[in-house]
Length: 105
Image (cartoon, rainbow, N blue to C red):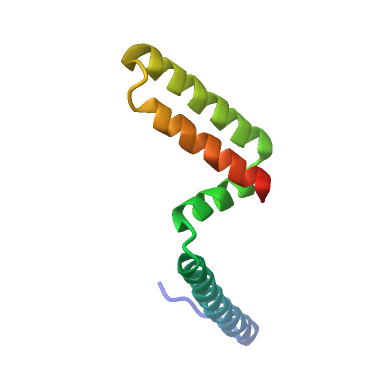
């Protein structure tokens, strides 16, 4: 089975391929720029993992983030009931620290 394109289809195909290639170049440039920003944050001794987590949370709907926080808190309470206080206090403090940082931002 052979596919034959007419002149208009071939022209459209060339245009679309060129536009997609241009978008890929732009996307790579943005990715490089984003990496530079994370490098800048590292140079300032900021925790890039926390920044990435914060960015992810900011991109999600507020209700979804709140629901995830409630579920996490419920799981932590359940673990405290089973394990006592071992291991979960640190997680609770870390979550409180993250929330304080988000409020400050």
